Amino acid sequence: MTDPEDKNWKNKAAVAGAAIGSAALAAAVLYMTRKKTAKPAPAPTKDAPETD
Image (tube, rainbow, N blue to C red; front, top):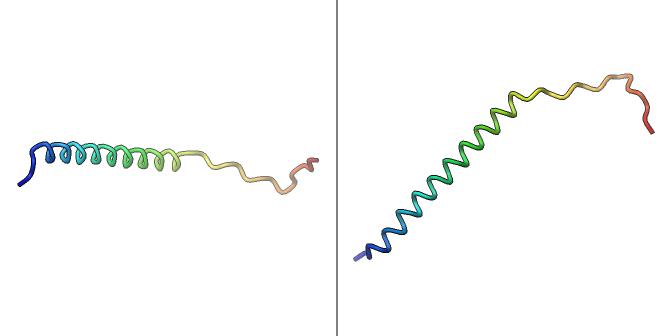
């Protein structure tokens, strides 16, 4: 019915896919955490000096 070799590579591919997905999710969470803790840029003053 199914070749054991065929099943073996599918299991490895599933594990690799899960690992890549987990790493991507962890990276996204870290990125969003860092983005929230970053200090906002100071607002420009109304009387900004003229530059040429």
